[in-house]
Image 1 (cartoon, rainbow, N blue to C red):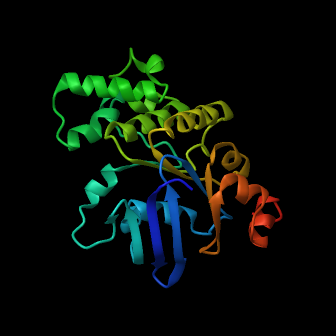
Image 2: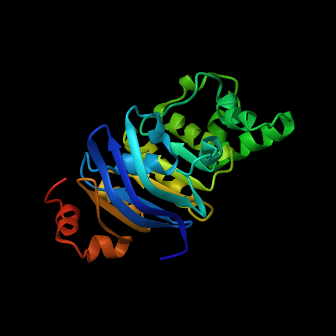
Length: 252
């Protein structure tokens, strides 16, 4: 395993009295693609949203344990959550462009963090749209509402928006599940290209996708960490019979 970028230690998450994640301890390697897999309801999205504290938005949530990004525990008292989230771009399951122009979607986070120079904004917006393979499709319509884009284009716009604030980590919650096969493949290709510069963590319910993309795999079952390791090992030589059963399609 390469150098860990994120270390999770004895993480427990409760929604009211529902114990969703149970003593999760794991490392996420730097500048690799890590897939979180497991059957529905096993805690995949909760784990992902714990990393940037999006679970704070859920009423009645209780958290114990640590999520270390570098040397910083994101759950320490006094932590600036906005700063934590700036370091972690988040791409949701459904494309969620903001109700504004294509240009302003990408520039939104930059403006929040104080970038006002139009020339700099123009350069970053173009660069991020190019990285998301969207520039050639939208360069002549940047002032149009983002809602006019197709679903696949909207998801690539969300990727560009996430990249604009120069995050260290990209968190992706089933980012292709609402897309057609061609658009989904486009997003996959962007993630593969980006892993040299970013630590990428993605939730997927599609094992074929995890096998195509992942360098490292985390398998959850009923809120527990069952197995973690290099993708080749987890998929081909799993150490736990539950992992073997899941990757062979016995349940899911």
